[in-house]
Amino acid sequence: MGKTTLLERLVPELTSRGLTVSLIKHSHKSIDIDRPGKDSYRLREAGCSEVVLLGNERWALMHELRGAPEPSIDYLLGRLAPCDLVLIEGFKHGHFPKVEVWRPELERATLWPQWPGIIGIASDGQRVQANLALHAPEPAWFDLADTRSIADAVVEHAIAF
Image (cartoon, rainbow, N blue to C red; front, side, top):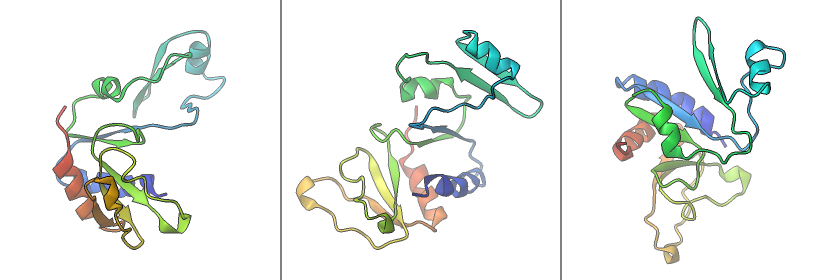
């Protein structure tokens, strides 16, 4: 759809405004940032619930769910270092402001108005007609290439936590 590509453009736009930006990305796939055979991988496999991996350029905290439910967005936000803005990719059901990336060539309906919190649709296609029977406020419509306007909307609709 282009969500990550849009985020790759939004982050530099937002940081150029002096904001410290972090991101939480939800994936429906099993993820692993570690590799079999590495010490940290072996220790996670041995039963550690959390492993911090520290290198000379970055560190990562890996937390094993081991069948437990996924943590809430509030829990994950509480684990982040202080910053000015947290961008969230995924968590469609979350009740926070969202910008939907919509591509008409995929021949799918927009997520709006069925998903909560969509304040804008970024697309490279023509605007879709609103279904007025649903009584949902119509979101702003952005050209997918207009990073500045999308960033303005993100900042305007940001929620303080």
